[in-house]
Amino acid sequence: MPKSFAILCLVPVMLLTGCAAGPQPRPGTPPVDPNLHAIYIDQHGELQEKPGAAPSPPSASAVQDPTLAGKDDAYSARIIANFKRERVARPNLALTIFVHGGLNRADSAWARAAAFSADMLREGQYALFVGWNSGGYTNYFDHLFRIRTGEYKPRQALLTSPIVVIGDAARSIVNIPTAWYRTVADPLSVTTWYTRSVELEYDQRIRVLDHLQINVSNKPPYRGVGASYWTILNPVKLLSAPVVDGFGSGAWDSMLRRTDLVLSKPIAYEGRQPKRSWEELEPAARAAAMPGVPAAFVPETRELADTAVTRFLKDWINDESLRGVPITLIGHSMGAIVVNNILARHPALAIDKVVFMGAAARIKDVENGVVPWMRRPGNDRSEFYNLSLDPYREIGENEFFDFVPRGSLLHWIDNIFGEVNSFKDRTVGGWWNIVRTAEDVFPEPVRKRVYLTRFPIGAAGMGPQEHGDFDSYCFWRASYWKAQTPLTTYPDCAAATTPK
Image (tube, rainbow, N blue to C red; front, side, top):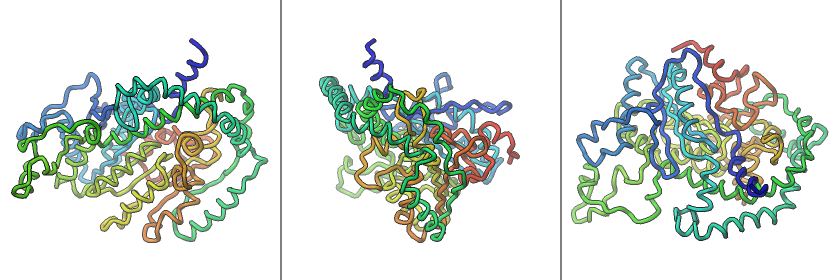
């Protein structure tokens, strides 16, 4: 295999390195059916059940209405029924929805459900893990052979794939000077003898946020990663850095498209709409139709394009017995983008807390999604937590034996993949990014309910040190969101818990 082709094949794997995880259940933890605690959406927006598990039986509503007999509805009904069973013994049971980030496959989604659900249940939280196909290879494959201008067009994509490859290669070549500059400049920015002007501004803004009563956890130490740059002159980086830039951007764009498919199947906006008859509409929609209005124009309560995740959220909202149940939304990395979409599309959900962990969402997303949710009537007790690595850890993250450019996913988005046209296009998970914009983004009525947490540089007890570490802890606890040390990784953090 030619070396150039080998490097090309590695690029999608490099993307979002560190986001994936496959935790093992704590010894002695009772077995959990992952299909009752996870909803996994494939690259086509379709539900994928865990292989080998019993198929979902038809729900009661599906038996009464044959148009609801699809597996998405049955799957949603099973989860809600199981929540209600668990709630009998735990009247104060809450719902915690976790959405993972990039470079995750179905097996890691099922692994989280199997590992964490029982321990979360002991602490009064019913876990629901929302997964989506964010594997590197499949996304670059889509970029080459399936997707054009955000739409599934395999015939056109196949014919134009050589042009796309040439374009990616051209981007790599054109950006060689920029890529080489970053390869040298990023390590210099974190060496112990180098002081950046941004640090001075950052210190001033921290004091301002304290005065504004925004809750900031910013514990020392603040420096100490400079010595890890002894491989700064690795010559392979001079080859891999332009390749990551040119070929990685297409896979990143494809992955962004898939965050939309978590809530809507492509049929919502791609291809021809299927024919709909009056009988296919929900009874509520038929009753709401005005005389003389054709059935085709009557909106459906349950749209054909709803994914299993959206079906679950709508079923939850429509169940009166669940309306008082508090909900916590947690998004790791690109999962924060999905969480922000949930906030925007389902305002009737009784969401109590939103937690972003190393969020790849833009600052604008928080301003346009999280803040309106916090200001909504009746949400005066809602809380937002934004968890970040130390910025020098972001810049200094090392993968593939230091053969690729340093930096976490967020650093790569802000400097390579993302379209940063203004400062608020940067990732909200970047500590310097959120500190510099918090005063402007969060208006006075919500500031006391905003928590900004930076996990300090250190070893055991300090919290996550790499982008993929966030869900290696008991991430469902408020003590973790506030970086209340010592912080132990799973399963040690759960083993010390008193069952509730």
